[in-house]
Image (tube, rainbow, N blue to C red; front, side):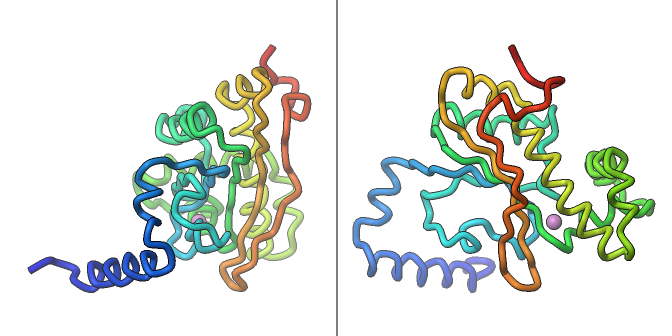
Length: 209
Ligand code: CO
């Protein structure tokens, strides 16, 4: 007997439904993937990439970690970006944060949570960089939301600072990096309007020659 039988049953039902709408669906997908989008989002179970943006399997390449961070030395995230840009030739990289992010909240207080604190230090760096803006918020809830937003803005910059994206631009490959935030409470995505399309929009300190 299989363990977690409900999940296997769900899978059979889902696969059958997909085949009913397109008998060739899995056959086509097994041959090639040509997503136009790379999604970098939070691991939070309430923020599932495909469902939120209404895309089918094969349409979005996904990387998720706690608090949607793009850390300069994270081989995992960098490998995803490199494969997405160099091999899949995605046209858009979306960094999507969300309000109510537990990782961001943990970074705002000084409680100890174990190993993860070392990961959350990257969000504390954002807090330190933008402290005046965050501390100007009237309530703790507003501070939390503001840091969720500013964290996305910083991670968008981090994507653009990678040698991968800068080399793609240098080669004339169109790649646009977007910063979005999702509301768990209302299911709505908001564009943070920090879209970057080329090296001239990157800070001089990080622009490769
Ligand atoms: Co989160």
